[in-house]
Image 1 (cartoon, rainbow, N blue to C red):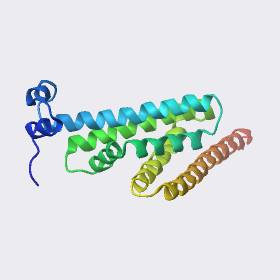
Image 2 (image 1 turned 30 degrees about the vertical axis):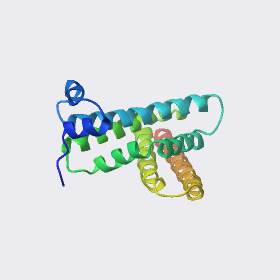
Image 3 (image 1 turned 180 degrees about the vertical axis):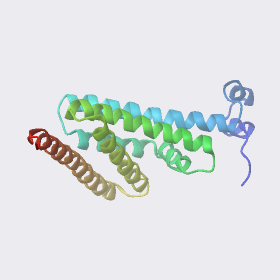
Image 4 (image 1 turned 45 degrees about the vertical axis):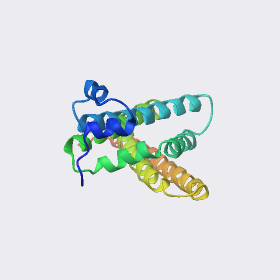
Length: 187
């Protein structure tokens, strides 16, 4: 595979190479910036989705629709995240892992407030949800509009199942704890 250098990128972009060198020391730095920017774009869209949810609507359905819109409008940005998540560069893998952790943390924060559950539960729920959403995103890149709609429906169902499971698991743990506290001590 030929090595890509900033000079070639600049030529393809139609700008002077010195413009790139002022901002990036090499192609890797450019790529890491692209990973960061792609993740930031997606996080900002998801924050906007949560604002729409605050005005009424299903958190899961609105979030999935927003995510699928992002993939439809920015397929190469999402492909970059997917590709570099398991790529050969440790720096790129770490950058994508950091972006995914941002998604998980933001969702866990939201779930903690909305569901009044402890952080350990909301982090586990958020991690499961983000993992499934990213996987569905990869699938959504190569399907037509009808298949994408079906994928969205399936994804909404899967996320609702995770949410219900987390809720019932938490309730069960609370009931178990309450039963332990109510038991009189044996003498």
